Image (cartoon, rainbow, N blue to C red; front, side):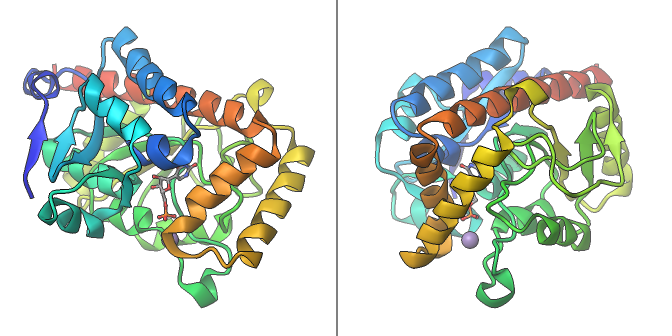
Length: 302
Ligand code: PSU
Ligand code: MN
């Protein structure tokens, strides 16, 4: 498929300057309007202030764009776009239409362009009940074959976290806790699950990436970056709201790729916006850490 790397991103990559990929599904389908547009601009600005070039990724009018301009960012925020995972990319492109890209599709396109670091909110994973529905995000299988370091706040507790971690192990995708050995659960700093490995800073992540290039088989790396304790959602309120949202999704028979967007937006409504503030805080944190990792990565190549 045809893809276009923006001049700014191409120049940064050619000069070994730090670049961080940003996804569009979180903007189009994961955050309510108009906060989504503000967030998309803010994420880019956080990176620019660090001296890092942002590359927000989406498919517009049949062309995968690596690095949107302001008009592109407006379009992913305001238009009713399809949600594209990797398998959807050729279909969207073939039809000449537009779509927001998931973690999987963004990772794939970022890697095609030579971008090594990507910031998102939460990773997709294994859904509850997957043993009968087979609902497992292509985010996981894509990371098994895509050399990109994804900074996320773990996966949401609407998913089956234990199964998600097991699948990442099976798929040989390294998971690094960032300053912690406890896997985070998106709005909450912790989950019930421990990790084998942690790193303390961005330079250590860059060292792992460097080693992976010589020893790995082209897989990605998951950096699990927990939200600071004072920014996390109240755990009791979190549990109460999630139970209601999950029951509603079940009752309404929501399935397939509609599940994640349904739950995210319903949880914002049920929490009267509190989950949204936490979501924005954790995403900002992830963008900042991804900027530091990209900076450490380009310093290795200076
Ligand atoms: N998790 C979030 N916010 C999101 C998503 C996941 O906290 O917006 C989006 C990401 O784009 C992720 C996708 O790649 O949902 C996973 O969807 P699915 O479960 O249909 O693969
Ligand atoms: Mn799914």
